[in-house]
Image (spheres, rainbow, N blue to C red):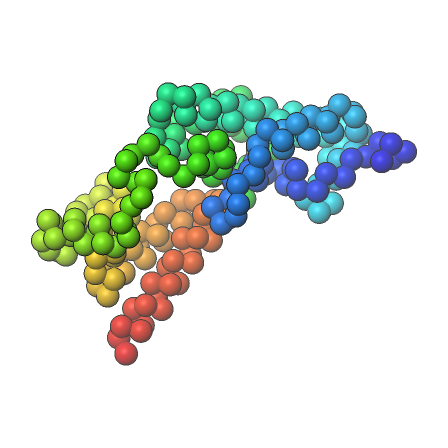
Length: 234
């Protein structure tokens, strides 16, 4: 609104949060289009920016700083993803390799309380690359629990997986422990000890995760495991 020198930009900026380009529960979003729209707003040189359902107001230098930070981080992360795709890096490596530039890491306008860079990476990767991760085993895969049953058959005992999961947990490798334990969860979904251990892992991961999207996901599956355990005890 020129008369007010104000731009009302909806959720293009979500308060002081990292841009919501990437949500594990929603369709993909076009990162470059997001940045270009913010650049269009910046070119208008607004004195005021109202965003996040008009719940957040930036004025003067803060308005420009918020725009600058969001635009730069989108371009930086987008370009890193494209570069790593061209290097044929696997997506599970890419989410750890792509980084917010050092000078933006502590930006007051890019707090990762709602979304996070890893979700951004998945979003841009999926937009350009589709679902296929260049592993031929994943092009037309068998059902996951069928594969896990085969792996479990080679391991031979639930206790081995539970023991190794606990060892990884003690070493502070809760995510790796979660993925190892998933073999048992998938192969033996009624194993109460596995469910209880997964709850412990998810609680630990959640305690160290300030991002709303991922924290809610961890809590969702903790509650799901509680319900499964209760149903198995009936």
